[in-house]
Length: 425
RNA sequence: GGAGAGAUGGCAGAGUGGUCGAUUGCGGCGGUCUUGAAAACCGUUGUACCGUGAGGUACCGGGGGUUCGAAUCCCUCUCUCUCCGCCA
Image 1 (spheres, protein in one colour):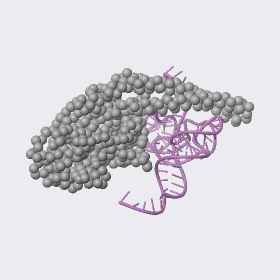
Image 2 (image 1 turned 60 degrees about the horizontal axis):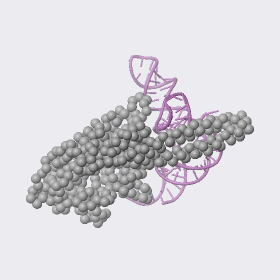
Image 3 (image 1 turned 180 degrees about the vertical axis):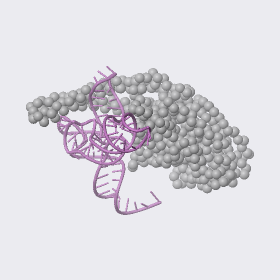
Image 4 (image 1 turned 135 degrees about the vertical axis):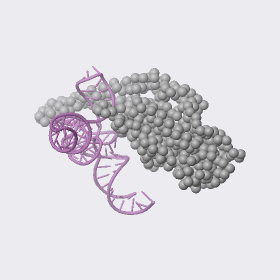
């Protein structure tokens, strides 16, 4: 979320920047400035009177000790009005504070200056492409047919056990999942990421910290009995490791990676978008997260984009990298690069990674700060994260792109992770 | 699920109505000493908000109450730990 003082000092900038995200911030910003000013006035009034009350209280303590009972009761009388005024100011302050907090979470993050204007997916900028689009043999099949033919994934079984969007992976299908997870984690470790295994259920404070709450609870599965949420991405628990934390500047950037299952309700999706592995309620993903110095966070972003690019390169998948336009970006992001791989039988691009710099937007909510050497005050850090990578669509692309009349060719980098299996027959 | 204990500053751990933002120890930082280091000694060491500043206000798990005054008393919620039960 945006800092209130920042909004007050830069109202025009906020309005202008959020217009790129197609968000009209004028009314909210105006209200914020008005309330913020009033809140400061009220705070000043309340604190001045509290200082008086505190002083009188001390005097009373002294007078009691000296046995001057008449003065004591006179002093007590003086506090009656003071206390009432303080109560009034505090009530007003609290009301304004609540109102400000509600307004504050309505404002999206400001997009970076690199973000192109635009409405939706069609306005995203392609900044890089790589790999070769394969020419498929006669009778090439989409991944859901291949998955059934080679007995890799049982969608029907998942429906029986749970419902649509919860496939059961079997045999080499299960194995290629495990191979990808291990490959991704090993690669991340070599890049200096610390591997962690986070909880899959998070509390409300964590959901708020990374921006899923209060607005997007519809995206997450919720356990009402204990008021816990199934994570939609490891980003939530991993980033919340750093909630209410002050780190040392010399330790930045802090690089963390985690594999987790991810759970998304995906209400409202239908049709070809949810066919096969295209969109699931439960899927596997390896996530990378960085905590960075504000001056260096765009270096971190580049580092992460380069790294994700190296993964799709190593897997030999045709890909492109998009810089998302204002209209297609998430609420919390300042700059996002999406990675898409070519799904040769479906003949469409599938998003497999989204790498974002949130700048101070999450960190402000998280109260994640860093301290420079010496005795300077702590300041708010920057957070970034990215998928590296999400599995299902990678599996879909491998099945489709690597199909041959003899079977599915396993990408070379995965063969050691598949017990030497080079082709699924 | 049953029973009990507890929540205080980076950590450990005092404090049971007034001068307590909070004794002390450890850790951290600065200094003296030393060829250097250790030890010893001295000093320093939370966060947020308001204020140009001096300074002020708040925070002892969260919320509410009693009181001129609450870390301290009362109510309530949450969480943690221990023991028993169950169990991967």
